Length: 227
Image 1 (tube, rainbow, N blue to C red):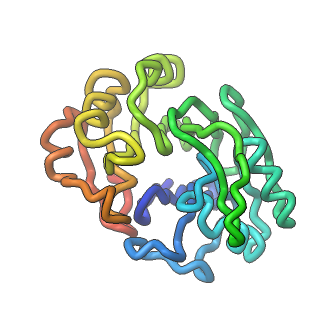
Image 2 (cartoon, rainbow, N blue to C red):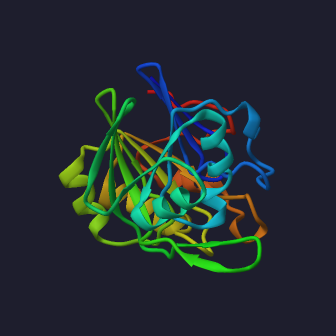
């Protein structure tokens, strides 16, 4: 098993000879180490419909004949673009060949902006609970702080690895994210995501690392989590 971070909220999971990528925002993301044509995956998992998370999903899916797993309205958008998609919703769990993924609440918004400026509703935003090779991984997606993170971790945990947004402005900032980690989720390892990509979400990840009790791994794009 290998789990790596690739800038913004992109996470790549490799297990059982299969690969899944979460929220592959590559073109327009100056902080990623990836190039769309080089991405080889079997699955693409989307937390919500914002363009900086859907990113290059359609092109990657077509290049790889990959299956997209997404909230049902967002999966419909993928279907409209000729991409095979599995639509699911909050509370549901889907098996994929690298593990399982369950969708849980996130407090945010979710829509996709087309090239002509049309905005399409893409369902509820979600977080993800993944079970990969016996490890429980919580990718919180884009979210503010909410108390049911504790319930999510108790029901689905213990959480071995947490990916949590720290960039503020559109999601939790450092104070709220550290509270979520320390008091609500209590993971073994925490990795900050969704920061520095754009000026409004610049964040001091060193400060975040000082504030959390878990093993905080601030990863550069392309680096893997050390279990």
